Image (cartoon, helix red, strand yellow):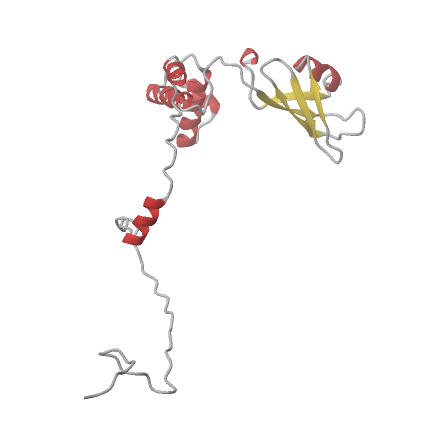
Length: 208
């Protein structure tokens, strides 16, 4: 009969001088683009279950936006503008060639343009037609009267929905000025009798 031992049954004591060596091997596996998404393992599923539940996403298509989208018709200038851009990108045509097509041609693109404008209004990407929005412009100086600002594009501006305007001057000493009378003041103060021109990036409807 043997005496007590500290070695558990089924195991052998290690030999003096023996040590474990661990090697980490990196294996890359090719996964095709159309391969199904792998199922997460149990540890991953448990970790996801422990996370706090996220707040429900807010629906961007509100009833007001939906109603505004349904009131978007062919009278919205953006419909034909979108259709023209789509046609010219597809055909590499010119604006003159587009205008020759007539008011309602190609009809399919006009309808498609209206549907996309409606979708953009419903999603809040575009404002409803006729809703006041800011309009961007820049000042193009043909002749530098003062000899300070130089020629070319010298400032960027915004005409706000309330009729006021803000102008941000470029150059080595940039500054910002705000005009309560809007475009009238910008043209009167900075126009220099035609030496500087207001060029609209987003042309207001009353100027079209």
